[in-house]
Image (cartoon, rainbow, N blue to C red; front, side):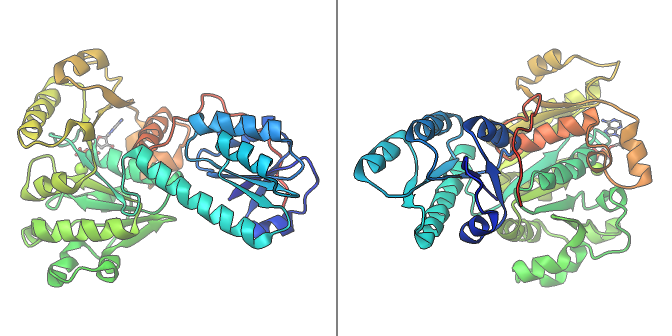
Length: 384
Ligand SMILES: Nc1ncnc2c1ncn2[C@@H]1O[C@H](COP(=O)(O)OP(=O)(O)O)[C@@H](O)[C@H]1O
Ligand SMILES: [Mg+2]
């Protein structure tokens, strides 16, 4: 999508042909601020020839710092050198003549490409490959599968690409049960493909769940798990990251050979714990092991699940004991198991629920997006 700032009654069809795809119009700088607040992923603003240089340069200066990935392409009736100089000095990416359709198309394409690179650099990610997020917890029942499934849905809702959810609790994986996916292909099918996993083969393993989310299920029976070798899992995950923007791994509650290999290739570890002492003791031990194995702490993202539970320590105490900050605190709620029974995840069924909001915040942070502004206001008008 592209947003066009112009005070005139522009012809939307003409713009959408030139800019390729849907175009939204805003009519003042104020409108544009509101629009951009509500569209955190918008990376391109085209400014019409009627908007004064003073307005455009102040916009450019503001967003250059606030939102480095955003590009501004300025249209002018005539491109004069002093305009060009002023524009480039204030951080406007391109200035093109308003009637030069081809130049506009090229400028927009270049700006989007720069935005992609800036976003990549900001999130410390190689954007040409998907981000692998390993959800790990040192105890059964602490909420790994709940967090992994809901995180996958929340990432998909951000509309930043497709999500693969992979169940690596090979013995007792229950992602299929969580998502009500009956008899489907499982990772066991990959055993016969060992050594030849490519994108097409990986796709054959995936079960479509919903728009932008595909699932790779764990073996149907624990006896099959031993045939799924760590190298095979690594091959699959590395192949999936070529086609999916996010690969979310649900895991077994221990350091299996498979989980150790996945720690090596993951970009981020979402470490789930509840607030009770046995769970904290286990995650502390796991963290000591992770330190010993040299898994960089910059990848550690601590998630407290059932964070309002009456028994147990406070968030502050946990941070002190574990020596790392809490990235997300998911409250305890009966709605979590209840939505599970009726089918689906709480993020999909009850998006405004505090549990969903906590997981959406986690997803935004994993995607390198700013937190949602507390109160969103919609100023813009849309024309089609
Ligand atoms: N925040 C929560 N509030 C209430 N129940 C929860 C919450 N998180 C998980 N549960 C419930 O706890 C149980 C275990 O969760 P699960 O995600 O399967 O844990 P794990 O994958 O770590 O074994 C499930 O029945 C789930 O519905
Ligand atoms: Mg589980």
